[in-house]
Image (cartoon, rainbow, N blue to C red; front, side):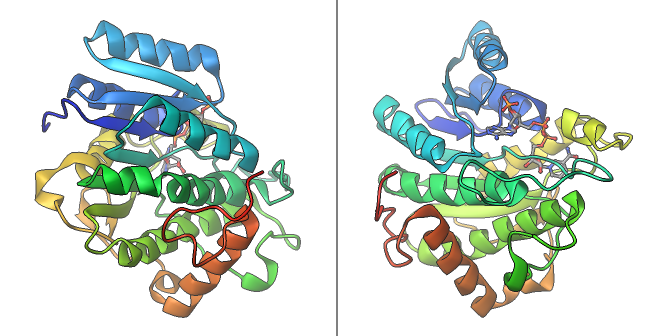
Amino acid sequence: MTRLDGKTALITGSTDGVGRLVARRLGEAGARVLVQGRNRERGERVVAEIEEAGGAAGFLAADLSSLAEVRQLAEAVRQGTGRLEILVNNAGIGTGGAGAPRRTSADGHELRFAVNYVAGFLLTQLLLPLLRSSAPARIVNVASAGQQAIDFADLMLTHGYSGTRAYCQSKLAQIMLTIDLAEELRGSGVTVNALHPATYMDTIMVRAAGVTPRSSVEEGALAILNLATSPALEGQSGLYFNGLDEARAEPQAYEAAARRRLRAISAELTGLSSNATASGAQKSPS
Ligand SMILES: NC(=O)c1ccc[n+]([C@@H]2O[C@H](COP(=O)([O-])OP(=O)(O)OC[C@H]3O[C@@H](n4cnc5c(N)ncnc54)[C@H](OP(=O)(O)O)[C@@H]3O)[C@@H](O)[C@H]2O)c1
């Protein structure tokens, strides 16, 4: 892998699963790694693993189901580093398997949409000034091949809830954000791409859904690291990959009007005004 000495990387959801392996690999390549998750004990363990392998890392605890904690996380990143060359929005909650109940975030939003999409939207916006000033920089949104068109009439899925529908909607929203943000960031030296890392990797998320794993975290980590570091992808932005290959997402991702609508709603949900999102400025701190 390309050497990353002197660079800083934040990987959300890196206390476990594929994010943890991505964090370790980035540390091995020389990047200073900001490990993030809710569980401090697991987070400190990942930091120790990176340090034992000769790397540098720190742990930032935050529950991404709270927008206030997302803001605190962005502030902690800004306080802790003057540079950020890699942001991997990886933290997520799976489908929960058959019969998963509808749950809401601290802000009252449908939980999978909140953690998998809205938190990444806000975190990215708040960190954009830092990413821009660190350019060339890359944002990687870890989405999924499981995608479903957003029903704007029932975004919070108050009718006919299913964990699978919630998961797939949140994952398509990440891809729509990726395309939208790439347009906004054109010429800035900051690129943003999304991917399906691998199918049914052997992680807690997959086991909790009652699914037998069919691929390894190594396979998924390789695909994420490809988008985060590969010289071959320099300057490439707004793309969706299935593993290592560029792919087409669900058709709604390519509807400009749907993306504009999602951005306006996201700005409203997070207290950012839609035209301030370009600079990462915030309307009302919470
Ligand atoms: N597994 C697959 O086959 C697969 C396939 C396609 C896409 N993906 C995507 O890949 C990403 C990683 O999946 P994975 O299978 O590695 O998941 P995982 O093993 O369940 O790990 C999820 C990570 O997210 C963190 N997390 C969960 N809820 C959080 C919250 N509210 N606030 C902060 N952190 C939170 C967890 O840390 P804490 O518990 O410490 O908070 C953990 O580090 C997800 O976005 C997933 O949708 C996975």
